[in-house]
Amino acid sequence: MNNPNLAVRPDFSSEDFAEARLQLTSDTVDDNQAARILGSLWDIQNAKDIQRWNAHREEDEQRARALAEQEAEEAAQQQRRLREEAEAALAEERKKNKAKYAPVPDKGEYCELYFFTNDGLAEAESFNPSIDDEALTLLKTDNGQHVWVPATNTRDKSAIIKDEDLTWEQFGEASVHLLEAMREHDWQEDRIEMHVKFWTALETHPWCRSPLNLLKRALLLYQSQQRQKWHRAIGTSQAFSLAKLNIGVLNDAREELHAREHNEQLENLRQVSLTPLLPPSPLSPPPPPVLATAHANNPNLAPHPKKKLPFPVPPHPPPPAQRLLIILTPIRHHVR
Image (cartoon, rainbow, N blue to C red):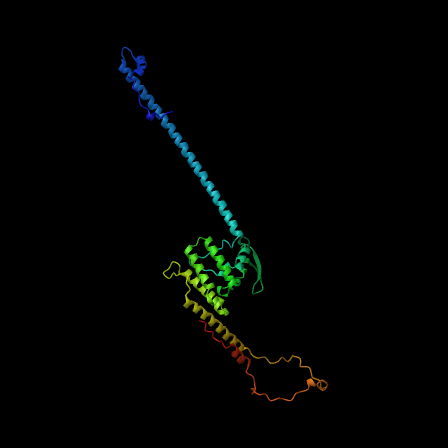
């Protein structure tokens, strides 16, 4: 059906409608009046056609809108199902591979490199929060009573190794794993590149190849201190880059470790000096007697005459604490 809104009324006075006019002609209706009557009839019919056309068009539009809304709702439901399935799959993947999805600190959050060593990641793999959070273990309190506590409360926190106490093999493991985690968690590329330069500078520093363990630990201590400072400074006016090593701060880390060792030696000396010297126990068995016949039969066991030594001998040796002080006197190594 053509759109009646676009229809044009014919010329009913033309020769094409002569027969139609003749049907209407009478003693009171001439040819012109018959043409006008035909035109009026056409207008009435066209108005009805337009009304039906518009009604059908409105119905078609309503059906189209309803169909579109239905399709949109079905599409939304499909998207929700896909999203829920993806979230469920991701949750399952996180449960199976916690190391891959370990949270990576960015702004203001610092964590030890130990968590990204092979041992740290293996520990994360073995921990199942869905089970361990509900597991209970029996502990004995100070008053002798036994109580049930969550197993997570008994996890050994002392197993975490400070950065400065890591081996260089562990440091290498952690730096590689942490860089991978940064990329997987969409860290800014310039920050990832900064950490690459930072850790590379530490691994290529001459102290890393030094036979003195203190210098190697100083590099790791500097690494830990500077990373913590960098995290705290993000987003502030004190923000800085880790890429270039600060020699002055690195020397401060070395001096800090040297002071620690010196204080530990003094503390050990103090503990030894405060330890009383115990006399021989009266329960100790006496030495076995030496038989005279043994000396007589074996000339090697006969007493030798005292010989004069070529150097003076003090009447009494220094006490043990003084001897330890002589041994533990720190010798400061000046490393340039």
